[in-house]
Every structure is written in C-alpha cells, then in structure tokens.
Image (cartoon, rainbow, N blue to C red; front, side):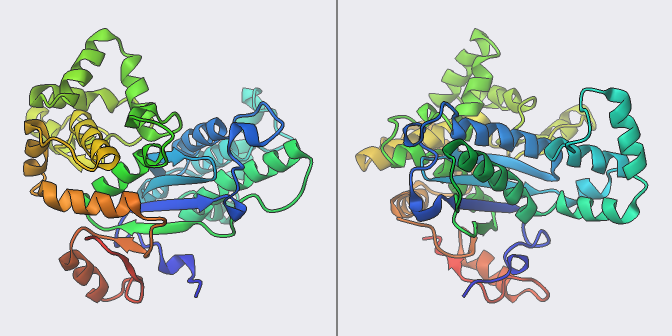
Length: 357
C-alpha cells in the first residue's frame, strides 16, 4: 500500500535519503538517441541538481543519471532554512522558479521585487517550508524536465513514474554502501569499465574537479587511489570548493588542529576522497570479476571504519546484483534498525527495512 511521504522522511531520525526515480515503463527516455533532439537530458539533470543544491536546504551527496532512471543521495539541512531572512527565502525561490514578468538581469528590479514580496509573511513561510522539503526538491528536479522533454517531442503524457522511492540511510556504513552503489550504477549496467568513466555520476564530477586543479593534485589523487594513506589525507582537502557534499567530514579534525577553523560538513568523518576511490575501485573489480585482491590500503580503510572486507563484500554483492532496492530504510546492522523502530515518536515503526546482509 502506498504510504504518505511524511511517514517515509523524518529529519529527526536521519538526514540522509537515497531517492530513485524511473522513467515511465522504464523506457530509455533519458538516452541521447531515444529522441529527435540535440538536448542532453542527463546533462540537464546534472545542471539542475547543482542549481537545486545551491538554493534548497537540501544538499546532494551523490547522483547517477542512467538511461531510464536516476539516483540522488540527499542530505536534509532544515535548520539552515530556518536561519534565512525573508529576502533570502524569496531570492532562493526565484532562482529556481524565475517569475515570467521579472527581468532577472535588472538588479534594481530584482531588489525591489524581493523587498516587496518578502513582506508577505505567509508566502515566505510557505516557501521556506518548500525549500527544506524532499518532495519539493524532487518535484523541482523532475517536473521541469518532463515539460521540456514533452515539448521537444511535441507530445503529451507522463515522463516519470508517479512516485519516487526514498530510502532512509540510518548509519555511516549504510551511507558509504549507498554512495558506492550509486556511483557504480553505470559499471553494474555494463556501460563503463571503471567507476569514474560514468559521465553523469557524482564520482565523475569529483574526479573531474580534482583534475581541473592541476597536475600536482592529480598525482596526489593517483597516489591516494594506490593506497597511500598520506596521499589520501592530502586528497581530503580537494573537495571543499566543489558543489557536491565532500566525502570527508573534516570539521572535527580542523577544529582540533586550527582552533575553530570553519569547514564544510562532509559525509564521513576521517574518510577522505582517496580512501573512497580505493573502496570504489575495489568494489568495482569485485563486481566485474567476482574477486579482487585484498590490497593493504583497502584493508586499512576498513580497519579504520571498524568494519571487515567480508561484511562489505556481502553487502555490496547484494546491492549491486539486486534488480531493485526494496524497503524504506537501510542500516548496516540489526541493532541500528531495532533502536530506530522501537524509539517513541518516530515515523519508521511500520516500515520495512532494506536488508543489510
């Protein structure tokens, strides 16, 4: 039975959600050769995700745009929206939905428009709530594309399946597994032979961002991928100026080292981009070949995560070989599931888990 989204999304339980949306009848509607148009809808989605990430109180930690579906890993940051001024709320909203009568290149007109509409307290409250709502985030991603694609094809009808699937991510191990699964989607589909070759994925974006920084940073990243711990630590700083949520959450370490230096919130503490690439490469080879060498660097990564290669292999194998992900939340162990489902006042009591192992 279809369940209301408010029972599937609860920031008080977890801020991380894996969203999956499929084209109607799983048709290859996003494939370049499936339509008589030069528009690349997969690149459009990538660009739109960056715009939404910049204006919603929702951050993108990962994505993968396939020919007939897409994956987005979202982090809800509702407290950020609560701190915005009325003018900031209106500014962010019109960046996503520009008013047809407003000339966006006229700074004076935009400023006057913001001042006028920021006085409407009810409207500001409504839009503030929308800008921290996962449903509105996905609607703002999918609906404009459906309209554009239908217009390009000169047709009407449904582009996306009616509802997107959202899976609540309950712990760090599940977050790492989900991020890896999303980035390895093109490899699992047989589209590419290495993870970063998947053009419309977050890992491709991350690697490209580092490559643009110059040869020195590229060499650091290569060394990190080979398992160099020192290079992995150095690679952790490369993502601070990228729009995606950094893999490593460096806030605690930098506060200790620099006495309060501010840093963007990342995904996993003490887990830099180099380590993530190492795990991604290892898991990709595991999927393609059914086995992979247990390199020292990989073993050390899982030791730092207080996990084991055996548990990771089992989890990755089930996820990457599954025809579809089931359940409404995902945790790496049954203890986490029990704590969440027995806690009073939460929304996940009657939901089914995605089996961890």
